[in-house]
Length: 167
Image (cartoon, rainbow, N blue to C red; front, top):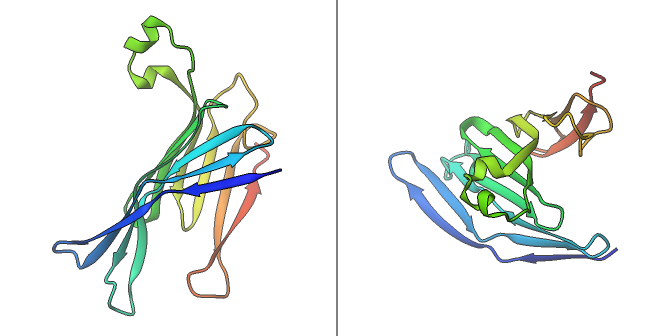
């Protein structure tokens, strides 16, 4: 299988006034191409905010929206990163039909939510199946999937571990 990665992001940094923080924006994104499946995934990235960057107690957090879209499969993920490592998002099926009536509908009525995710990216993210018509994309049984982040021996190094719930 051939996998091609084509990043096209450039960085843009700015000092956040009155907060003693620096925000680094990645303008652009990346494309991952999976030849075997004939799919291309386009990604955009959230910003990175570094609080008190010149001290020993500096902390980093993601901010803004990240997205992954695959037109071939019709899937899209939208993930919002908020303060204190909070994350919320959806995996949705894009409607590829282009009828005249659908063009007039708002985007929220053109998509179907398959999964919702919420939690903290540094602790636990819960992914919940929201489509009773189809089996989940991410797991083999109904219920929620949890991803726990465990701190490794090194400072700030996290390892994601999958935990299945038999709900």
